[in-house]
Length: 58
Image (cartoon, rainbow, N blue to C red; front, side):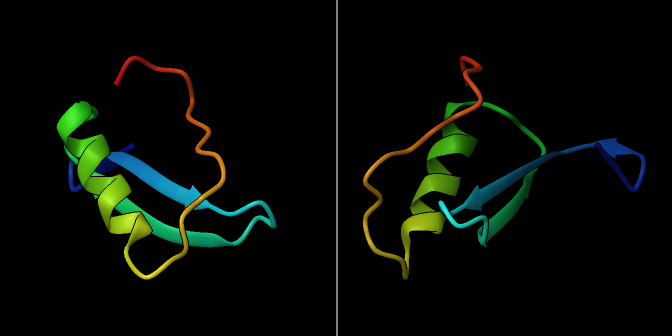
């Protein structure tokens, strides 16, 4: 999606009930951005039983 004319990626973390736990907007969609988001999303929440991704290599 575009934000202020720049391409950005929206990273949502959703639980099994459909509740949004965390949202992150990042300029990159790479391993570093994914790890930063996962660490941020897990802070303050219990450990997940399973993590499902969109299947992209990032």
